Length: 411
Ligand code: CTP
Image (cartoon, rainbow, N blue to C red; front, side, top):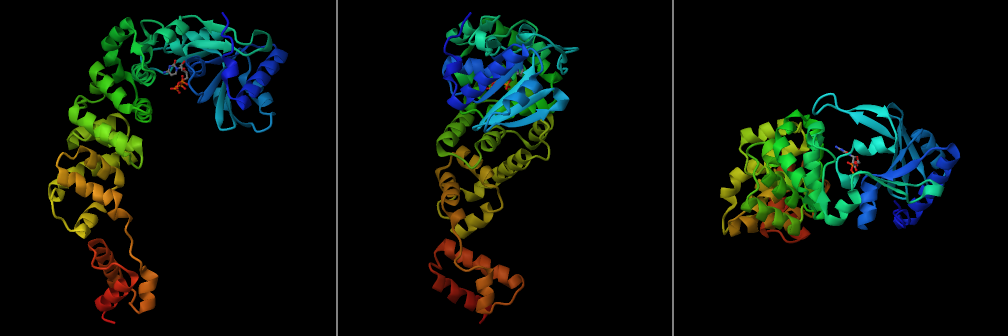
């Protein structure tokens, strides 16, 4: 079967390198293929991200030859017999075709060298299990053993065989990610299989779950994935207290339009916002996130949630608001802002995030020293008071600050 014009959809610098790779492979007498996500995305007309090349032969040798091209940077991962090339902001990963089998559910696969058919058989979904030959004489020849092209046309995510989720339960998380990213549907028996295989997620290590989880949060619409994962029971398998509900949906919608400093971290804080201390502890442990930045942020977010009552006031001194919230990372405050139901609370958190946190005094420590303020704790106190005066409008200019600083220092 031919996939005419598919490779030609690659951006010019990549196309050039792929054509070169085909020529080099011809010379070495090996077959080489584009495979997996790149074939899927090219067929869908989506912009390519990274490229996977599989060689029925020595992939590292081929990578070394390709890296002679101008602008190409090579990294060889000798331990794995793989190599990566960076060119023009794109990444190309090269590996030798292999076949895999799993000793027991959740185990890392046992790997042997194989041909392209073996390589495709070990993959997760039909839409990810296609290969396009790049050798000169066979360029554009499609290997599609499982009807991936048809499933792409019908918008279906389908596993290759009934043991797929048992072999690797992270595929359940991947299935939801592709389904929601591409606006596809889980094919019927895949969906049934997934629901029956949920317990297999218990066989997956914390690190692997974390990686998939982070991939969810980095998608452009993670709320769609989380909602679907909630309905399918995948979310509840990560922790029984994780639920997708209407307030969460509202918070995610607000966050998506309001923005945040680091969206994936913010989404994590939103997702765990309704867990109690113990549940959060358990979830972080399960995802091997204990002690991580996400641990810190989600704890801060819950701690601040406990203080929101104090901040839900029509009239609040700006300096008081500032000095309370200054203790928290912006992401933790954003999470509370997007969950806030009370209009005053929402306004106050927004006031801090959008305006107050950017306010600075005109005078710094050095200027105070020049004015004659002595070094020591008093200097810090004066700086804080100057900032408070700026926030509350009692000092509006550098002159005001100088006057106030002199008065406070008694000079
Ligand atoms: N793969 C698999 N099972 C997994 C992980 C990966 O079969 N648990 C295969 C799939 O064929 C996939 C390829 O390895 O297409 C590359 O994996 P990855 O880089 O994670 O996915 P991409 O397909 O490149 O998709 P994307 O990065 O867009 O999510």
